[in-house]
Length: 136
Length: 80
Image (cartoon, rainbow over all chains, first blue to last red):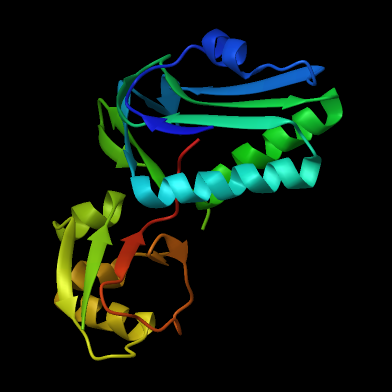
């Protein structure tokens, strides 16, 4: 499942719907808003998304992870809008028969998101607002 | 033919526009379109690492445009 939303999510609720009898390992990654970045205090962040393209890219990454690592299921939820410190930004859940492929698939999904899913963070700080740009 | 150009994140802010429609000759490449956009929006020339997508897929500069294509220009992504 791929979800791009302004709403918060509950990792527990996602896992409750997600788990099946074939899964012996559930790996999750949750990204949250940190109170500092590159030496600056951060009040909150704003996330902008190119929704149509981000959805397609996330679907493609999910399919790649399922195929490459042979895991049972992959879910990605990514939020956008204005988020306060400690709020959830995104989560990945991977369900697999065993832990090794679950960890590998989860790592693959977050690394690919950071390379090619069109989502951007802007940090709102006491010193001004700064767009975060990833590695090209 | 007409294409729709969308701008995101810092690119949107520096040129002060979120999207526009542009008329280009049939078979125009994305590289030629970007040169034209840089003429129209000078700040685009100063953006390093501009990424380009057409209809939601990353493309190279030789990619030929088609009627109604949606072109997106944006900086390196920072989601996750």
